[in-house]
Length: 171
Image (spheres, rainbow, N blue to C red):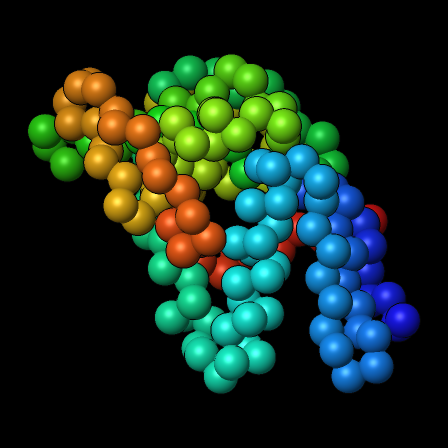
């Protein structure tokens, strides 16, 4: 097998392996469920789109937006993070995003309860409330309206997908 890469600088998602076995493309997903789903959305879905002749734009069906952060988030390390969060749309049309306190990659219930993934680049300073950050919200998810209750998200491989941005850097 020819290995293209096997470590990536993102969370959740480490380890991830990609390569070729003869003419067959191979993608090894991480073992934790949240890591597997996020990696499938960022790597497997685009790979399948290219292999089936679908455009990358058509494969990436999530909605990208900016939202105001509702609370502080500590500084990040050298990995790019995809933080699970709730998303609220206010009556004036603005959005706010609240990352969950726990971001453990084995906690599938938090992913199922989330309405957005916040892209936190590697090495940023501490994030403060009222800053605006890019995030993707999940198709089929009923957003909070003015602070109401969020309907739990029913995630499947077609439910969440960010638009292409410069991806996590390889270690």
